[in-house]
Length: 350
Ligand code: GLY
Image 1 (cartoon, protein in one colour):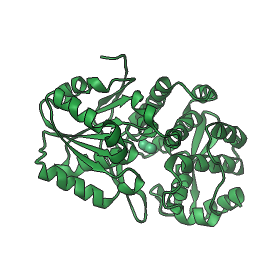
Image 2 (cartoon, helix red, strand yellow; image 1 turned 180 degrees about the vertical axis):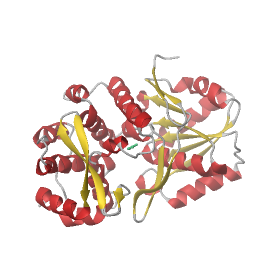
Image 3 (spheres, helix red, strand yellow; image 1 turned 135 degrees about the vertical axis):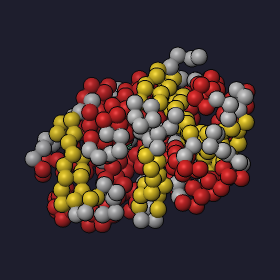
Image 4 (spheres, protein in one colour; image 1 turned 90 degrees about the vertical axis):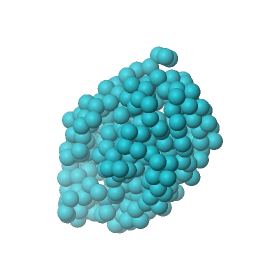
């Protein structure tokens, strides 16, 4: 097997995350001890299918698996109830049974939809994440959060359901369009900002060395998930920039991509921090985000963002927990009343 790193996650279901360059050809070898002889339903999107769909199917067949494939249109709009039901129906028509498995082969949309389908179909079957975007590799494929979007908001329907394996071939990211790769960079910068000053320092060299940075981000996420799998505290740190980012994504009807929205959201949070008695790292963060090519303008007013974030799933009654930086590599969870947040947004965005 090609050299790779293995990161073990000890959660309600324990599993390995394999990270390496050009490891896809050995996927059969990695699956066999976990899945045995079973049928595999591959979920992928139109972009990934065009580039790598046949290759994965051939590799699975060469490893002795009978595999079928379901392709959804690429894009956030596909993370919807209609596609969830259609894929579940496909699994039934293909007679996928409890001893069979799903492979989610793609970015965050495919991973979230595939994971949710796996948690629901026959009350739960095994699934494997094979992330093909930087964002999925460092964030959505790890930690077992699955979801679809509904008209009222992003990720509002979902489950915690851990995969049996995450298999990350970093060479698959070579073909990513620059803007999609940049989306993942926002999440990478997030990890540095919330928990790892040293990682943040290495990101000043643009572009960063992909494999080691992916591995470090996954280690950070693993450490957080192991302490708070079901998102009752510490895991909230991973939402740095996301409360405001999700609001912006939703307001734009997803025309602003997740990574771009998170970049804007992180900057809003950094600008808000001094208003809450914390340090001002906004200029530092803005320089870093600009070096990766992010547009840092905020196209919405404070009232618009406030209205949009009221449906955020992190809201509990009239309180919402936001993540604010104390310094580079150190963020805190701050719970504020929604009215207070409205005022803070007005002071931050104007
Ligand atoms: N993406 C944030 C989390 O997995 O908790």
